[in-house]
Length: 270
Length: 209
Image 1: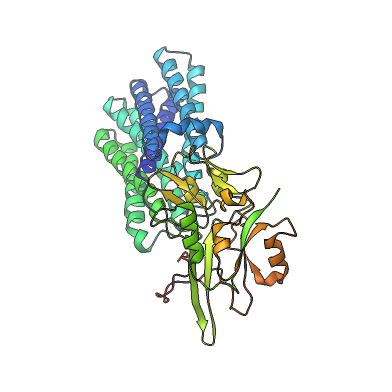
Image 2 (image 1 turned 90 degrees about the horizontal axis):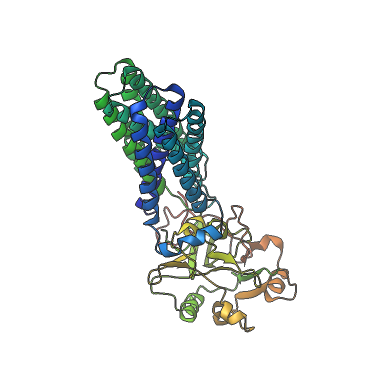
């Protein structure tokens, strides 16, 4: 099937944005990175919105998009709804941090932001689970979407902490979060690779180099190195971000190229 | 609720492509696009036990149509009166989600209107008690149109002539296709899947490798 770049960018950017906001939400519990939280949430909102706009570019009749509201169903409606809710949650969290609201309120919104990141990034992949597509019809697909988004969002958080020159505790914890994101990405993409049988043949290079090495092992190594030493955090986090995003995009590209229809009687596909 | 569909008797089908042509003429289907398509299945097997038959395909009017359930705007819908799966082009946003969800890839993309379209079972004709163009034009009398739930319909009467083992549907992945195919051992063995590898001269079913 033809690669739908609009949709690749949508889930890669919006998912990373949601997890960037989630990392700022986690910091509400730790209170380690006060300087990075605000720009992280702003960047997260920007990524979510840019991703949403990217998704609309693959529609031929955007002018009719409001009809989506009249037909609530899983898929595009759910993604749009969750995207809107996630932006609202991020905006409220931003407001609470800006106004130095109570720690309890910030923690509550932080927890909601984490939950929203999980639900949103998973649902973006679950939309593609359909019986007609043999390689997609596995729960490992949305889990892979979640894993890639988590790795890139956590790496971005690590980068912003480094840019904002946060303290060593904050940098070390951001590195731990990057490791966790990378491990989740590694496990989930491997699960998809084996379940969808895309680990060999023409998909082998894209899967092993793009998805596994760049998307999981690179941020994993950078995060692991950053846990032990905070010097060079900027370089480590930058490499982690680049690797995670390459992996996240490669995973989504792989999904499209690995598409196998039950039948394609007319020989056409999108 | 009616279950209007097409039944094709493959024992009679000659693979003349008349239904394809009639569909394109009647519905003004663009060059390169098809709402109805005849595939050549096989030849498979070893001589003298070989199977080769023509398989006319079109929207299968699935009872659990995934194209309807995934459509974000309701543009893909099931008509209340006829129970036929249709596309309201005025509502289609061109997301092509239905094309991904169709197990058979029988939906077409209309480049000029930038929306999805498909077989309508010639609703403009059947609403006037006429037959769909592909049925009317079938020179071999192999195509039937009607309501599966009506014992007196053409489809029910044709199906009633055959044993259950001679009646087939395309591979069902939970969508319950309503379109039925009749094929007896006279023609050969019904093929759920045909490997195209090693058979480069056949169109067969395009299948997963």
